[in-house]
Image (cartoon, rainbow, N blue to C red; front, side, top):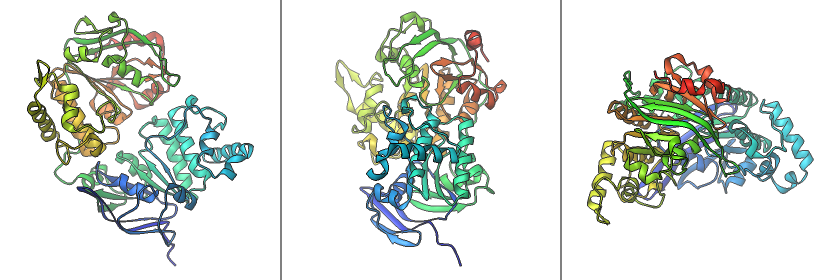
Length: 514
């Protein structure tokens, strides 16, 4: 007798104004199966996950849970059935303990006995190799430990289907290996896992089967253990999209940017202070900085953009001290920034693409004597849309209406078309599909080849090794040595990401050139 599937979706349809996000989707997830859900940005993955977790209702179609037809009433109902979800952005309260965060997701009767809950957290986390101290405050945890809290919170609720959205995007290589060990153990004990990722090699290493969405429809399924990454990518993006970026050797020129023992004391209790960072960045090169989220990347970006000011001489650009200048003054000198946070810092969610263009590109002849020429703004926005193949309903579409990958391409395009002398890009391909990532990589290489310097802050180690002339890592607000990429191993970089590097060599090696 054939076992009943854990989850079955039949003909799921979800329509939004001007967009059919899910168009007749069928999906089957079996008990003990690690099932990858793949697709480009805007393919309909997030909408489908929200339907499975009860956040939204489908317009058409049927959901079966362990063979029984059901209508999900909301996330609480989904959790009662045994469906748990770990979102790409963690939903934890920094000022609460591990146990308090987990208790918030439990029925009052289960959350009331804190001693019993503490013991349950210790038992479950130890059983799956994710040991947690229930009394620790979340703000003291590493990113990997915070993800453990999210997963343990689901497991304590006896989840039989665990949905993971881009779970490795903020982890070190060692933490990824630990996570995969845990997921394999969960699957061996009968838990089903729905794994969403753009990292196809990870899908091949971990998953038993994969379903691919394009334009809201299922366009293919495969056994990722026997397919190549290129073959899987072709199912996602079709035949006409390049799958990789050609990165010819660089020939760096003169020094453009120097940091001289740059330090900054963060006033944010959950922020990270910068400690004596030294860096020399040359024209015509891409330098990469790896690191686990929360180790000073955001503060470093703010110090470079001018959101944080420091003594003028601690940061020089083209020989001029700029540490005390604000963002607008630095932009006028040829510095451009792509922040990690697309909605809020990279773009204003409720403003149109036209208005978001004006925010940072106004100096491109769009404003004269205080008057805005909206014809020029629209022309520039249209150039971005055409050059970077940004999918949107029109130039008047709001930023929040775009998928993550399309908004990221728009933000990158807005900065790149200004032809900056220096581009600082933080996590430029985070959560984007392979086609969008290739397009963004091409932009960075083109800027480099035009003589610009690019500082690439990323948690995607494959991206860093592919693009960068030199690389290092940031941990606890300290910057490791920067070495030529060919001489750096992934193991060495992983150690640096964990803070295992000597201060004494920093200044000397950071100023070395490839």
